[in-house]
Amino acid sequence: MLDLIGYAPGPIISSLIKTLKPIYSYIGIAAFGFLALVMLVFSVVSLGSYRSIQQNVPEIIQDFLRSPSPKTRLALKKNLNELLVATSTKFQLNALGILSALKKTTKKHPKQSVLAVVAYYSIVYPGAVVVTMDILELVRPLVTPLLGVLGYLFGSLFGVGIVLLIFSFADFAYAAQDLRSPVWKAFGSSLLLSRLILEEFTIFDQLVFLLDDILWFSIFEWAYKGSIECPDHTTLSEIIEGSLSSQLGPSTVLFYRFQELYPLPQMKALVHMGTEASEFMKYRQPAAFIGINKDKCVLIAYVGRDDVRKMNLWTISPLITRNIVTKCRNAVLSIKPYESD
Image (tube, rainbow, N blue to C red):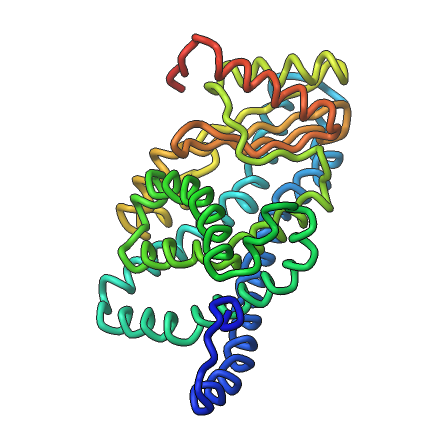
Protein backbone atom coordinates (compact mmCIF):
# COMPACT_ATOMS: atom_id res chain seq x y z
CA MET A 1 0.00 0.00 0.00
CA LEU A 2 2.84 2.36 0.84
CA ASP A 3 4.36 1.70 -2.56
CA LEU A 4 1.07 2.64 -4.20
CA ILE A 5 0.91 6.03 -2.48
CA GLY A 6 4.62 6.66 -2.91
CA TYR A 7 5.14 7.29 0.81
CA ALA A 8 8.48 6.48 2.44
CA PRO A 9 8.02 6.31 6.24
CA GLY A 10 10.76 7.03 8.71
CA PRO A 11 12.81 4.27 10.31
CA ILE A 12 10.61 4.01 13.44
CA ILE A 13 7.34 3.80 11.53
CA SER A 14 8.89 1.49 8.96
CA SER A 15 10.10 -0.84 11.73
CA LEU A 16 6.64 -0.75 13.38
CA ILE A 17 4.92 -1.60 10.10
CA LYS A 18 7.36 -4.41 9.42
CA THR A 19 6.61 -5.85 12.86
CA LEU A 20 2.81 -5.47 12.80
CA LYS A 21 2.12 -6.52 9.20
CA PRO A 22 2.92 -10.25 9.62
CA ILE A 23 1.03 -10.28 12.93
CA TYR A 24 -2.08 -8.81 11.33
CA SER A 25 -1.66 -11.13 8.36
CA TYR A 26 -1.77 -14.16 10.67
CA ILE A 27 -4.75 -12.68 12.52
CA GLY A 28 -6.55 -12.08 9.21
CA ILE A 29 -5.85 -15.61 7.97
CA ALA A 30 -7.04 -17.05 11.29
CA ALA A 31 -10.23 -14.93 11.13
CA PHE A 32 -10.92 -16.09 7.59
CA GLY A 33 -10.32 -19.71 8.63
CA PHE A 34 -12.78 -19.32 11.50
CA LEU A 35 -15.47 -17.79 9.25
CA ALA A 36 -14.93 -20.51 6.65
CA LEU A 37 -15.20 -23.20 9.34
CA VAL A 38 -18.47 -21.75 10.68
CA MET A 39 -19.90 -21.59 7.16
CA LEU A 40 -18.72 -25.14 6.48
CA VAL A 41 -20.45 -26.45 9.61
CA PHE A 42 -23.72 -24.72 8.70
CA SER A 43 -23.50 -25.98 5.11
CA VAL A 44 -22.80 -29.58 6.13
CA VAL A 45 -25.72 -29.56 8.59
CA SER A 46 -28.01 -28.03 5.97
CA LEU A 47 -26.87 -30.59 3.40
CA GLY A 48 -27.68 -33.30 5.94
CA SER A 49 -31.42 -32.62 5.61
CA TYR A 50 -31.23 -33.32 1.86
CA ARG A 51 -29.08 -36.42 2.30
CA SER A 52 -31.27 -37.82 5.06
CA ILE A 53 -34.43 -37.59 2.95
CA GLN A 54 -32.73 -39.03 -0.15
CA GLN A 55 -31.40 -42.01 1.80
CA ASN A 56 -34.56 -42.79 3.80
CA VAL A 57 -37.23 -42.46 1.11
CA PRO A 58 -36.61 -45.94 -0.44
CA GLU A 59 -37.34 -47.61 2.90
CA ILE A 60 -40.17 -45.35 4.07
CA ILE A 61 -42.14 -45.64 0.83
CA GLN A 62 -42.33 -49.46 0.69
CA ASP A 63 -45.75 -49.77 2.37
CA PHE A 64 -47.21 -47.20 0.01
CA LEU A 65 -45.77 -48.98 -3.04
CA ARG A 66 -47.15 -52.34 -1.91
CA SER A 67 -50.62 -50.99 -1.25
CA PRO A 68 -51.28 -47.46 -2.57
CA SER A 69 -54.19 -45.91 -0.68
CA PRO A 70 -55.05 -42.69 1.16
CA LYS A 71 -54.10 -44.42 4.42
CA THR A 72 -50.61 -45.50 3.30
CA ARG A 73 -50.04 -42.12 1.63
CA LEU A 74 -50.92 -40.39 4.89
CA ALA A 75 -48.50 -42.68 6.76
CA LEU A 76 -45.79 -41.92 4.18
CA LYS A 77 -46.33 -38.19 4.56
CA LYS A 78 -46.26 -38.45 8.36
CA ASN A 79 -42.97 -40.40 8.39
CA LEU A 80 -41.31 -37.93 6.04
CA ASN A 81 -42.72 -35.05 8.09
CA GLU A 82 -40.98 -36.42 11.19
CA LEU A 83 -37.76 -36.61 9.18
CA LEU A 84 -38.13 -33.00 8.02
CA VAL A 85 -38.73 -31.83 11.59
CA ALA A 86 -35.69 -33.74 12.86
CA THR A 87 -33.40 -32.28 10.18
CA SER A 88 -34.51 -29.06 8.48
CA THR A 89 -36.66 -27.65 11.30
CA LYS A 90 -34.03 -28.47 13.92
CA PHE A 91 -31.37 -26.72 11.85
CA GLN A 92 -33.55 -23.62 11.46
CA LEU A 93 -34.30 -23.52 15.19
CA ASN A 94 -30.59 -23.76 16.03
CA ALA A 95 -29.74 -20.95 13.62
CA LEU A 96 -32.55 -18.76 15.00
CA GLY A 97 -31.41 -19.58 18.54
CA ILE A 98 -27.93 -18.23 17.78
CA LEU A 99 -29.29 -15.02 16.23
CA SER A 100 -31.77 -14.52 19.06
CA ALA A 101 -29.12 -15.12 21.76
CA LEU A 102 -26.76 -12.66 20.04
CA LYS A 103 -29.38 -9.91 19.98
CA LYS A 104 -30.39 -10.55 23.60
CA THR A 105 -26.75 -10.44 24.70
CA THR A 106 -26.08 -7.11 23.00
CA LYS A 107 -29.19 -5.65 24.65
CA LYS A 108 -28.45 -7.09 28.09
CA HIS A 109 -24.73 -6.23 28.12
CA PRO A 110 -24.31 -3.07 26.00
CA LYS A 111 -20.93 -2.06 27.49
CA GLN A 112 -19.38 -5.49 26.99
CA SER A 113 -20.79 -5.56 23.47
CA VAL A 114 -19.17 -2.22 22.64
CA LEU A 115 -15.85 -3.44 24.05
CA ALA A 116 -16.10 -6.59 21.93
CA VAL A 117 -16.75 -4.48 18.83
CA VAL A 118 -13.80 -2.20 19.64
CA ALA A 119 -11.57 -5.25 20.08
CA TYR A 120 -12.81 -6.66 16.79
CA TYR A 121 -12.12 -3.50 14.81
CA SER A 122 -8.74 -2.89 16.42
CA ILE A 123 -7.44 -6.46 16.11
CA VAL A 124 -9.42 -8.60 13.66
CA TYR A 125 -10.61 -6.02 11.11
CA PRO A 126 -7.10 -4.64 10.35
CA GLY A 127 -6.04 -8.25 9.73
CA ALA A 128 -8.86 -8.62 7.20
CA VAL A 129 -7.77 -5.41 5.46
CA VAL A 130 -4.12 -6.54 5.33
CA VAL A 131 -5.07 -9.92 3.85
CA THR A 132 -7.34 -8.19 1.31
CA MET A 133 -4.45 -5.97 0.18
CA ASP A 134 -2.13 -8.99 0.04
CA ILE A 135 -4.60 -10.81 -2.20
CA LEU A 136 -4.88 -7.75 -4.46
CA GLU A 137 -1.11 -7.71 -4.75
CA LEU A 138 -1.14 -11.39 -5.73
CA VAL A 139 -3.80 -11.03 -8.41
CA ARG A 140 -2.54 -7.72 -9.81
CA PRO A 141 0.05 -9.32 -12.19
CA LEU A 142 -2.65 -11.70 -13.44
CA VAL A 143 -5.43 -9.15 -13.85
CA THR A 144 -3.53 -6.15 -15.19
CA PRO A 145 -2.81 -7.63 -18.67
CA LEU A 146 -6.46 -8.66 -19.01
CA LEU A 147 -7.65 -5.13 -18.28
CA GLY A 148 -5.68 -3.59 -21.15
CA VAL A 149 -5.78 0.20 -20.92
CA LEU A 150 -7.48 -0.06 -17.52
CA GLY A 151 -4.51 -1.95 -16.08
CA TYR A 152 -3.07 1.27 -14.72
CA LEU A 153 -5.79 1.20 -12.03
CA PHE A 154 -3.78 -1.40 -10.12
CA GLY A 155 -0.67 0.78 -10.22
CA SER A 156 -1.83 3.50 -7.83
CA LEU A 157 -3.71 3.77 -4.59
CA PHE A 158 -6.31 5.92 -6.33
CA GLY A 159 -6.80 3.21 -8.96
CA VAL A 160 -7.05 0.42 -6.39
CA GLY A 161 -9.52 2.58 -4.48
CA ILE A 162 -11.66 2.88 -7.62
CA VAL A 163 -11.61 -0.90 -8.10
CA LEU A 164 -12.58 -1.53 -4.47
CA LEU A 165 -15.34 1.09 -4.61
CA ILE A 166 -16.79 -0.43 -7.80
CA PHE A 167 -17.01 -3.85 -6.16
CA SER A 168 -18.26 -2.35 -2.90
CA PHE A 169 -21.02 -0.32 -4.57
CA ALA A 170 -22.09 -3.41 -6.51
CA ASP A 171 -22.16 -5.42 -3.29
CA PHE A 172 -23.88 -2.62 -1.36
CA ALA A 173 -26.92 -3.23 -3.57
CA TYR A 174 -27.20 -6.73 -2.09
CA ALA A 175 -26.43 -5.37 1.39
CA ALA A 176 -29.27 -2.86 0.99
CA GLN A 177 -31.61 -5.76 0.20
CA ASP A 178 -30.43 -7.52 3.37
CA LEU A 179 -31.23 -4.43 5.43
CA ARG A 180 -34.82 -4.52 4.16
CA SER A 181 -35.22 -8.25 4.76
CA PRO A 182 -37.40 -9.60 7.60
CA VAL A 183 -34.47 -11.44 9.18
CA TRP A 184 -32.54 -8.17 9.51
CA LYS A 185 -35.56 -6.36 10.96
CA ALA A 186 -35.94 -9.16 13.49
CA PHE A 187 -32.32 -9.68 14.52
CA GLY A 188 -30.34 -6.70 13.18
CA SER A 189 -28.64 -4.13 15.41
CA SER A 190 -26.42 -1.06 15.09
CA LEU A 191 -23.37 -3.18 15.94
CA LEU A 192 -24.13 -5.65 13.17
CA LEU A 193 -24.84 -2.75 10.82
CA SER A 194 -21.38 -1.29 11.41
CA ARG A 195 -19.81 -4.65 10.61
CA LEU A 196 -21.96 -5.04 7.49
CA ILE A 197 -20.79 -1.67 6.14
CA LEU A 198 -17.08 -1.95 6.98
CA GLU A 199 -16.77 -5.56 5.84
CA GLU A 200 -17.74 -4.38 2.36
CA PHE A 201 -14.17 -3.11 2.05
CA THR A 202 -12.68 -6.56 2.61
CA ILE A 203 -13.23 -9.75 0.64
CA PHE A 204 -13.72 -12.15 3.54
CA ASP A 205 -17.50 -12.49 3.29
CA GLN A 206 -17.37 -12.84 -0.49
CA LEU A 207 -14.73 -15.58 -0.27
CA VAL A 208 -16.62 -17.46 2.44
CA PHE A 209 -19.86 -17.46 0.44
CA LEU A 210 -17.91 -18.46 -2.66
CA LEU A 211 -16.57 -21.48 -0.77
CA ASP A 212 -20.12 -22.31 0.31
CA ASP A 213 -21.32 -22.18 -3.31
CA ILE A 214 -18.40 -24.38 -4.39
CA LEU A 215 -19.27 -26.94 -1.70
CA TRP A 216 -22.93 -27.19 -2.79
CA PHE A 217 -21.97 -27.33 -6.45
CA SER A 218 -19.39 -30.07 -5.83
CA ILE A 219 -22.14 -32.25 -4.31
CA PHE A 220 -25.23 -31.46 -6.39
CA GLU A 221 -23.74 -29.71 -9.43
CA TRP A 222 -26.44 -28.10 -11.64
CA ALA A 223 -29.23 -30.16 -10.03
CA TYR A 224 -29.42 -27.63 -7.17
CA LYS A 225 -30.50 -23.99 -7.37
CA GLY A 226 -30.83 -21.69 -4.39
CA SER A 227 -32.91 -18.57 -3.75
CA ILE A 228 -35.22 -18.99 -6.74
CA GLU A 229 -38.11 -16.55 -6.76
CA CYS A 230 -41.24 -18.65 -6.99
CA PRO A 231 -45.03 -18.22 -7.14
CA ASP A 232 -47.67 -19.18 -4.56
CA HIS A 233 -47.80 -22.74 -3.22
CA THR A 234 -50.72 -23.76 -5.43
CA THR A 235 -49.03 -22.64 -8.64
CA LEU A 236 -45.69 -24.03 -7.52
CA SER A 237 -47.29 -27.40 -6.75
CA GLU A 238 -48.77 -27.48 -10.27
CA ILE A 239 -45.36 -26.63 -11.77
CA ILE A 240 -43.59 -29.36 -9.77
CA GLU A 241 -46.19 -32.04 -10.45
CA GLY A 242 -46.34 -31.19 -14.15
CA SER A 243 -42.56 -31.18 -14.56
CA LEU A 244 -42.04 -34.50 -12.79
CA SER A 245 -44.92 -36.12 -14.62
CA SER A 246 -43.74 -35.00 -18.07
CA GLN A 247 -40.09 -35.89 -17.51
CA LEU A 248 -40.23 -38.92 -15.19
CA GLY A 249 -43.76 -40.23 -15.38
CA PRO A 250 -46.40 -40.43 -12.61
CA SER A 251 -44.86 -39.17 -9.37
CA THR A 252 -45.97 -38.52 -5.80
CA VAL A 253 -45.55 -34.93 -4.58
CA LEU A 254 -45.99 -34.23 -0.87
CA PHE A 255 -46.47 -30.70 0.42
CA TYR A 256 -45.76 -29.56 3.99
CA ARG A 257 -47.04 -26.29 5.41
CA PHE A 258 -45.53 -24.23 8.21
CA GLN A 259 -47.81 -25.85 10.81
CA GLU A 260 -46.57 -29.31 9.81
CA LEU A 261 -42.89 -28.36 9.82
CA TYR A 262 -43.30 -26.63 13.18
CA PRO A 263 -45.58 -28.83 15.33
CA LEU A 264 -46.36 -27.92 18.93
CA PRO A 265 -42.99 -28.79 20.59
CA GLN A 266 -41.06 -26.83 17.96
CA MET A 267 -43.48 -23.90 18.17
CA LYS A 268 -42.97 -23.79 21.94
CA ALA A 269 -39.21 -23.69 21.41
CA LEU A 270 -39.68 -20.90 18.87
CA VAL A 271 -41.88 -18.82 21.17
CA HIS A 272 -39.39 -19.34 24.02
CA MET A 273 -36.71 -17.60 21.93
CA GLY A 274 -38.69 -14.38 21.98
CA THR A 275 -41.13 -12.40 19.88
CA GLU A 276 -38.52 -11.56 17.21
CA ALA A 277 -37.93 -15.22 16.31
CA SER A 278 -41.58 -16.29 16.44
CA GLU A 279 -42.86 -13.28 14.47
CA PHE A 280 -40.10 -13.74 11.89
CA MET A 281 -40.99 -17.39 11.27
CA LYS A 282 -44.71 -16.64 11.18
CA TYR A 283 -43.98 -14.09 8.46
CA ARG A 284 -41.56 -16.35 6.61
CA GLN A 285 -44.02 -19.29 6.58
CA PRO A 286 -41.50 -22.00 5.62
CA ALA A 287 -42.87 -24.87 3.56
CA ALA A 288 -41.45 -27.92 1.78
CA PHE A 289 -42.12 -30.17 -1.20
CA ILE A 290 -40.85 -33.73 -1.60
CA GLY A 291 -41.18 -35.48 -4.94
CA ILE A 292 -40.99 -39.27 -5.22
CA ASN A 293 -40.87 -41.38 -8.35
CA LYS A 294 -41.19 -45.14 -7.80
CA ASP A 295 -38.91 -45.73 -4.78
CA LYS A 296 -36.59 -42.75 -5.22
CA CYS A 297 -36.63 -39.21 -3.92
CA VAL A 298 -36.41 -37.04 -7.04
CA LEU A 299 -37.16 -33.57 -5.66
CA ILE A 300 -36.68 -31.60 -2.46
CA ALA A 301 -37.75 -27.97 -2.28
CA TYR A 302 -37.68 -25.64 0.71
CA VAL A 303 -39.80 -22.50 0.32
CA GLY A 304 -39.88 -19.40 2.49
CA ARG A 305 -40.89 -15.76 2.30
CA ASP A 306 -38.05 -13.22 2.50
CA ASP A 307 -38.66 -9.96 0.67
CA VAL A 308 -40.45 -12.21 -1.84
CA ARG A 309 -41.23 -15.92 -1.87
CA LYS A 310 -38.06 -17.91 -2.62
CA MET A 311 -37.16 -21.57 -2.98
CA ASN A 312 -34.08 -23.77 -2.62
CA LEU A 313 -34.51 -26.61 -5.08
CA TRP A 314 -32.81 -29.94 -5.70
CA THR A 315 -33.98 -32.51 -8.22
CA ILE A 316 -32.54 -35.75 -9.52
CA SER A 317 -31.69 -34.13 -12.87
CA PRO A 318 -30.24 -30.74 -13.88
CA LEU A 319 -32.74 -30.73 -16.76
CA ILE A 320 -35.71 -31.02 -14.38
CA THR A 321 -34.25 -28.33 -12.14
CA ARG A 322 -33.77 -25.98 -15.08
CA ASN A 323 -37.30 -26.69 -16.31
CA ILE A 324 -38.88 -25.90 -12.92
CA VAL A 325 -36.75 -22.76 -12.49
CA THR A 326 -37.81 -21.50 -15.93
CA LYS A 327 -41.50 -22.15 -15.23
CA CYS A 328 -41.25 -20.41 -11.85
CA ARG A 329 -39.68 -17.32 -13.44
CA ASN A 330 -42.38 -17.25 -16.10
CA ALA A 331 -45.08 -17.56 -13.43
CA VAL A 332 -43.58 -14.77 -11.31
CA LEU A 333 -43.25 -12.47 -14.33
CA SER A 334 -46.84 -13.11 -15.40
CA ILE A 335 -49.67 -10.80 -14.47
CA LYS A 336 -51.14 -13.33 -12.04
CA PRO A 337 -50.47 -12.08 -8.50
CA TYR A 338 -49.43 -14.27 -5.58
CA GLU A 339 -52.33 -16.09 -4.07
CA SER A 340 -52.73 -16.35 -0.32
CA ASP A 341 -51.78 -19.74 1.09
